Length: 369
Image 1 (cartoon, one colour):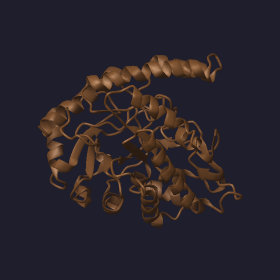
Image 2: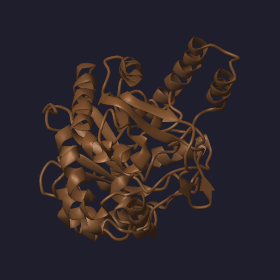
Image 3: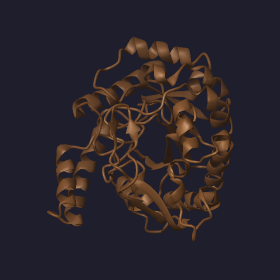
Image 4: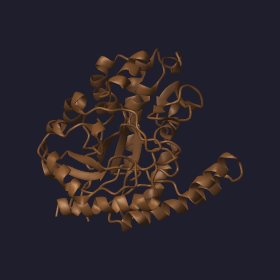
């Protein structure tokens, strides 16, 4: 088992897992009106119970529900907030060689976190059905602001996109408190924005959408820290910095150097899941900004984008390289991203997925004996 008793663990996971065929079929049947919501829940429960046992079997110290009750890693959460609706319109999100279905966030009223947000029930089911530490994942508030089109904010609610920061932070503080009250001690904010801020192409697109790209780092740092302001001392909140993950493709390229000083040094997270499975991530030099102490970086050296299993010697060599810039005791190991950020999933089999997770556990035991 991993040698740390508090998350993030030496062997950790980002969150999402490949949806089994039975779950995909049930979701399709529900969308077509062939089964009821209650019948879909029965299938979801059964498939989640199975992956909880699988996560325990491969030796992980934590468990997620694989995001099995979601279609997207972010829209499902945002759509459950007060004052936010998701519309099937607008531009596709363009990945390398493939685009997503059109979805667009719209703010129609005052933003808030309702007491009956569906993901609270999702977490409660997870917590009561695993012996491992239950981990919950939600999108970062920065993702919502960054993706809002100029016309997507109702003028009766807010003057413009920048006017919603205070309410967005308050909604996330309420979410943190609600998940804590439900028993959550390991929460993760999934965030594509910090990687986008390392990409000249994404910065240009942000400017074209009317965002002041030159001040986004400082504004987003203030937003995240406002969200974390009341975090209980015995609750771990991490972030996963993602370059895009849709059917094994990606969006942004570029190392962490442009954002590392603020991201690692100023954000009040307990840990960072950073992608390091390809040359798109750059070198490990930005890890020098990690403050010495409790914070950890979970180094994503095992790719979730293909089923090819990495070589143990390569993993240990790269971890040694990372340890030149941050203490090995503050590092952990994981896949670089989830295996299914949307219900479509990446291009590998379930057997290859579980082999990757078992490999992460085995390598962690070698690196931190």
